[in-house]
Image 1 (cartoon, rainbow, N blue to C red):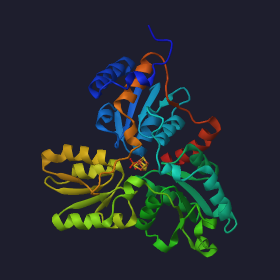
Image 2 (cartoon, rainbow, N blue to C red):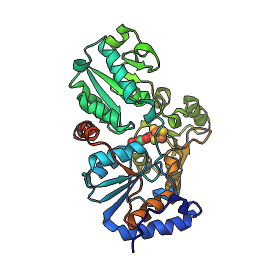
Image 3 (cartoon, helix red, strand yellow):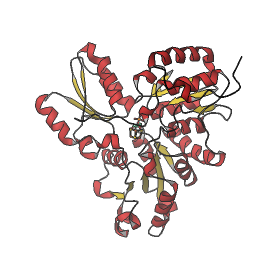
Image 4 (cartoon, protein in one colour):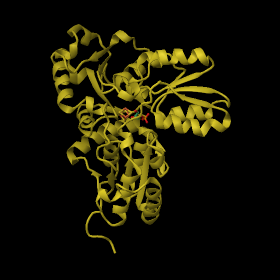
Length: 366
Ligand code: 13P
Ligand code: SF4
C-alpha cells in the first residue's frame, strides 16, 4: 500500500551509495516508462550512471520537450529543470532532486538588473528596434521570459553562433547575458572585432560604458562568468605543452577568451566528448571543463591509449552540480513510487509562456 505522507529526506542521510544504488534501480524499475531521468555531463558518477539520457543543455532540452514520461527527473541544475518544465506538456512534472542545485553564473543576472540595463540602453539607442536580447540557457526562467517579451532568444554553448546569426538577421545589436565569455568567444569566431563587443558592468551607471561605446557596439556582454571555467588560465596550457608539446587542447566556451584562443577546439560538453572520443588513439588531451566529465572521459579513453587531462592545477568541480547525490535521487524516486511528488519545479504560467517563446525561437533556429 502507498504511504499517505511524503518520505522525508532525513531517512536517506545514513544510506551509503551502494544501498542507494540498489534502491534507485528498484524504484526506476517500478516506475518504468512513467519516469525519465535526465543527466547532465557534470553529474557525479553515482548519479550519472542512472540517467536514461545524458547530454549537454541543448540535447537535454530537446529530450525534455520530446519526452512522454509523466515525471522528468532532472539531474542537473535549477535552470535545466525549469526548461524541462517549460518545454514539457502541462500534465508532465519536472523534478530537481536537490533544490539547492543552482548555477552561480545564472545568478549573476536577474530581472531587475537586466530591466535596468534595458532602460539605460533605451536612453542612448532605440533599444526595441536595434537590440535583440539573447540569454544563455544558464539563466532563470524570468530572464528567458524577458527575451520572449522583447523578441529575443535563448542560446546554449552548442548553438550560440547560429543564435547570434539569427539575431543579427533581425536587428543590428545583441545584448548577451549572463556569460560574457560565451558571447565574446562566439562573436570573435564569427569575425566581430573585440572593440565591438563591450562589457556591461551591472554595478556601474550605464554599465561603465560611454554613450559612444554603446552606439558603436555590436554585442553588449553582461559581466557574468562561471567560477568553474574561470579557473582555467592560458599559462596552464603553456606549462603543460612544455612537457607534452603534442597535446591537443579543447575548451568549453565558458572559458576566458585567452584560453579559447590557445585551444585547438572549442565545444559544449557534448561536443568535447564527441571530439575526444572520435580522435586518433594514443593522443593526449588537455580539457578546460568540469572535473567529473574530464575524469570519466579519461577512464573511458584509456583503453585506446588516450590521455585526458584536466587543465587547471587545482581541482575545481561545479559544487552545485555536485549537490545531487544518490541519496537525493533515491529520495525523489521512492517518493514517486509511493505516489508523492517532491521537489517539483513549476514555472508560473505567464512567465513560462513568454520563456517558451524564446526557447522555441532557439529550437527552431538550431
Ligand atoms: P553545456 O550545455 O555545454 O553542457 O554547458 C552547460 C554548463 O553549465 C556548462 O558549465
Ligand atoms: Fe553554472 Fe558553471 Fe556550474 Fe555550469 S559549471 S552549472 S555555468 S556554475
